[in-house]
Amino acid sequence: MIRALIFVGFLVVYSPPAALIALPIALITGNGEILWRWGIAGAKAATWLSGVRIHAVGLENLDSKAPYIFMSNHTSNLDPPVMVPLVYRPMSILAKKELFRIPVIGLVFRIGNLVPVDRSNREAAVESVKKAVEVLRSGRSMVVYPEGTRSRDGRMLSFKKGPFHMAIESGVCIAPCTVIGTHDAWPKGKFRIKPMTVTAHFHPPINPRDFQSREDLMRATWETINSALPAPYRT
Image (cartoon, rainbow, N blue to C red; front, side, top):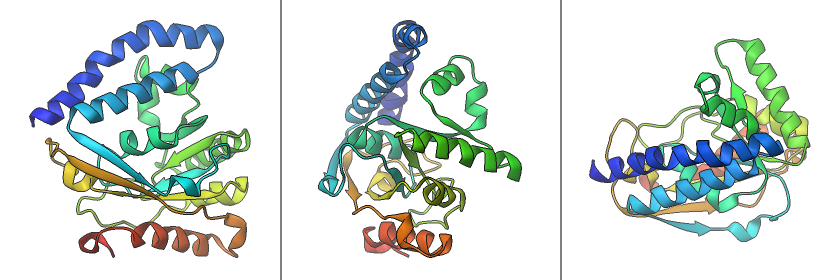
């Protein structure tokens, strides 16, 4: 519990300076880059202070200048601060629409080009996909957790269709990533962080144009991510 408190407490203390310093600069310049850099620095520091160390495998599979749709398994709140700093470039993230209603945070998300997701009705979900495609076509990468929620047992859940519509419509390659160890370090439903080394395994990109259907693309991505999970968590 102490390490989880350190992780959360650091971010709580770290965030106000971002609001006081980085946010006004972003508002004046109209550029959310400083917010991204501030956020990534905070995520890296909080992860390190919690005792979690990060090992990356396969980054050489990625073109550092190309946009990708980064798709990963999702078991822990540690997943974004583990993966995003490793692949940072001009990018966006799909975020729950409710977060955009929070004062300051909602403004930060909008300036940072995050895309609100509303799964409560089909029309709103379609609009989210359209917005995401626009962001991708502008040259930004995107981080997506296609399961839509965290897995409680470390095994992969079935994928939602929306992220694969994004890939097909935009033509942007999917960069599959298997995050290993975050479930053991900080599982869903627990408020404790176990100090350990976690691994982000980046697979070769998947081109959506190589597949005849969305279902084939979903299956290939799911199988690729699942293939690198430790045996107890592999489906």
